[in-house]
Length: 444
Image (cartoon, rainbow, N blue to C red; front, side, top):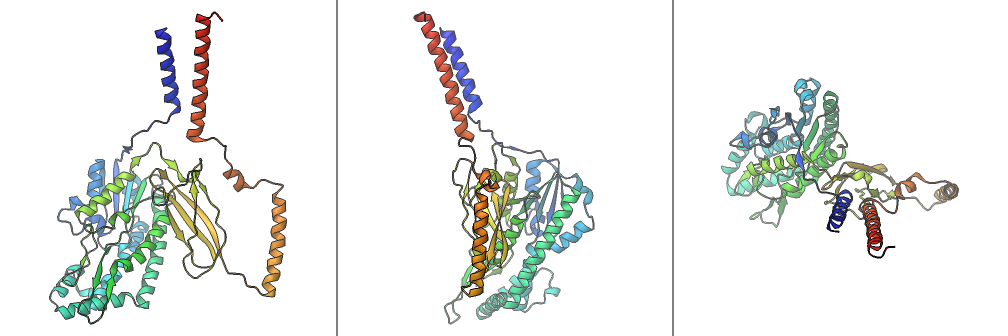
C-alpha cells in the first residue's frame, strides 16, 4: 500500500513539474570579441583612470578581446564617415558585441560655441573649452558672472539657436540611420547596444540673485527638450537592428556627471564621473542577460487609435496594451512609448518598446487629419463618405476582419490552460485511486 502511495506522489510531482512554469535564472551570454565606438564618453574622458570607463568595465565583466575605437569630440557625421571609409571593418566583422555612444556632440559642440561667445572666448583658439570657460568665469567679478550666465542662456533661447538645434537633430537622425545600415551590412549578426542620451544638466536651476529682478534659469528643462527628441529617434529606429541601453532615467539624479553650474562655478563638463560610468556599464551588462522567460511585446493586444484632429502640437493618443489573458500592461514598467511624425497632418507613428519582462518592439500607425468644416462642400463630402462607410460596413458583415481574428483568441491560454490540464490529470488520477480501493476492499 505504501509503495502505491509513493508511486502516486511521484506521478503527482511529475505532473506538477510538467505543467507549472519553472523560473530559469538569467545568465550572461558569451562574448569573445567586443568592439566599442563613440565619442569622449566612450573614451572615458575626464576620468583619472580610464579603466573606470564603461567600456573597460564591460570588457572586464565579459573577459572578451576588446577594441575601443571611440574618439573624443566625434559627432554622428564623423562616425558615418568613419564607417563609409571602411575603417575598422575587419574588427566590426569579427565582433560579437558592438557598443556605440554617439550624437551628443551634435548638440554639445554648438552649446560650447555659444558659451564661448557669451564669455568672450574664441572657440577656435582654445585647446580645452571646458577648462577655459571655467577659468574665465572664475576670474570674473560677481556682476560679470551674472552677465555671463544671462548672456549664455539668452543666446541659447534665440530663434536662430533653436533652428540650429532642430537642424542638428534632423542631421543626426539621417546620419544614424545610415550608420546602422552600414554596420548591419558589415556584420548582420553582432549584438549592437547603443547608449541612450542623458540630461547632464538635470536639476540645474540658477536663481539670478542680485540681478534686480526675480528670475530663475532652468537649464534642466531647456536641455531636456532636445534630449527627448534625440532619444525618440534612437528608440524609434531600433527594431531588430540594435538594442538601447536605457540610461536616461537613471541619470535623472545629481552626482553622476561632472556638471556644476552655479554663480560661483561654471563647469559644463557633461561627462559621466566614475559612478556614472558604472551605471552605463551595469545597464549594458543587464541587456546581455538571457531572459529565459522573456515575452515578446508583439504577442500582446493593442487598442485601436481613431483618426486624430490636427492641433499644431504633438499628439499622443492613449493606448491600452494587454497580454493574451487580458491583463493590462503598465507603461514605464512593461513598455515605453516613442512617438514620431505626430504633429503635422499625415501618418504618425508609435513605437511600443518592451521593457522589464517584455522584449522587442511593435509599431502602430495613426492618422492626423484636418478638422472637417461645416460648409456645404464639406457637408456633401461627408455625406458621400458616410454612404461609402455604410456600404463598407454592410459588406463587412459578410466577411471576417483580419484584425478581429487577431484579437479573438482562444478563451483559455497560457497559465489558465495549464491549470485546466493539471486539474484534469489530477482528477483522472484520483478517480483511478478510488477504483483501486473499491476493488481491493469491496471486491467491486
